[in-house]
Image (cartoon, rainbow, N blue to C red; front, side, top):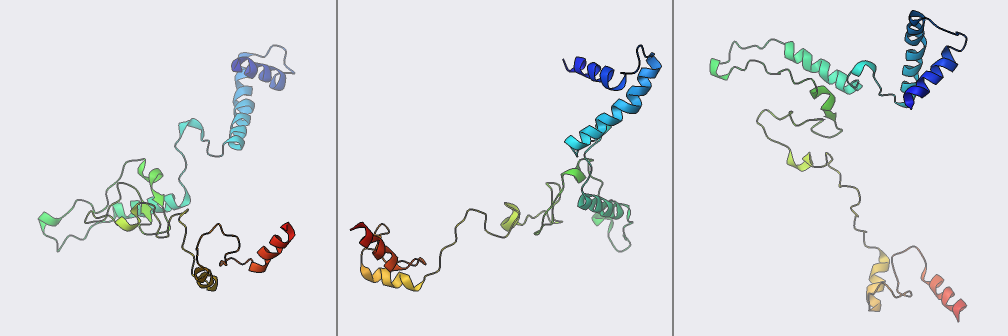
Amino acid sequence: MSVENFWRNLKHGTLHHLLHPQLDQLAYLIATEIVPAFEAKMQIFDPNYRSGGRAKALTPFQRQFKKGWKTLESRALGIANIKQMFRAGHAVNSPDPAFFCEVVRRRTIPFYHHPLLKAKDGSVIASIEGSGSLAPPRGVKRKRAATPGVEASSSRGTGRMDDPFQLSSSPIRQDEYLDEEDENV
């Protein structure tokens, strides 16, 4: 059905002035008018669309990270004072091609996160590894600080929250509750 729709749009949109187009003329019109219009439409619908099966473009920080990585990878090591048993071939090795697309930049330490990125001694910072943030996670309620109304409510006795006349630390005044009681009577 989509093929028929394509040919109908081609016939009525592009070839409307040609009765019997020749094959080379049809190929030229498809290459110069139909395909560029399709690619422009795909850019509107999906800005991440890249023709030809190319990989997704790197973000600016990923490009900068890759550039710095390549610079360090090509740098010669000063190995004059290092014993042969402690020499490494390269301090920075070339990673697999998908590495630079998968690396994630964070605002807290460690700034770059990927399973292949580890400290020299292999240790992991456990306190921030889970969520990537030093702040408490969302949804965790902080305890409210004690206010002067708390001492007054504890002196009244019950301490139950369902008592509407109990003094509380809320900004609503107690006499507002009393006004409502007078209206109901």
